[in-house]
Length: 238
Image (cartoon, rainbow, N blue to C red; front, side, top):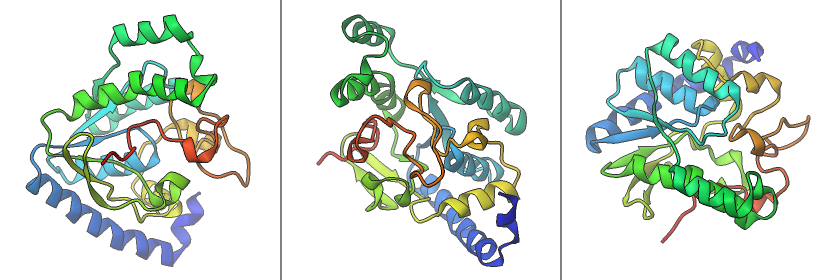
């Protein structure tokens, strides 16, 4: 996708949005202390990681290690250490909850129903996130509005009632070409699966490559309907 760097309109758009993004991250770190960034190690999150580190913004970066991530995602964690000197703060699922789930439903029970899949996500992602956000004033995500049917009305800032803190989605209005233009221009390390037609990457058994013409989130929980394709991390609760 190096051709993206030859599009002057795209280059100008990315430059302008990067300035605003840098200002926004700095403002969040100043007004909401402590603020944290939940890095899922996808392309969008690597963009934010690059800016936070290069600009020395006082925002802690953490990731959820579900125990079932692709090998390429773990490899990227190692590259983060070499490229940025960053050792991610990892939150893992409680072993007792994982054991209880797998004993009752099997190691891959999440394929059997949306409810069981949500249950697996609850154990491996939602509960660890609750621990990661405890005592924080704000959290930052790499969500974009065009990523999924469940995110079309994504706001750049909202109060997260489930966790009792502010939630920021500073890339809400960024397009996929803009994300990749920034990545290529700044030599940002990325998950090797992106080059194998994985635009969205989660746990290994719940992610597949997409084919030409498919939506960028089609490879996530591909056996489910689009309206149910969230893991629970970003479901709004009044």
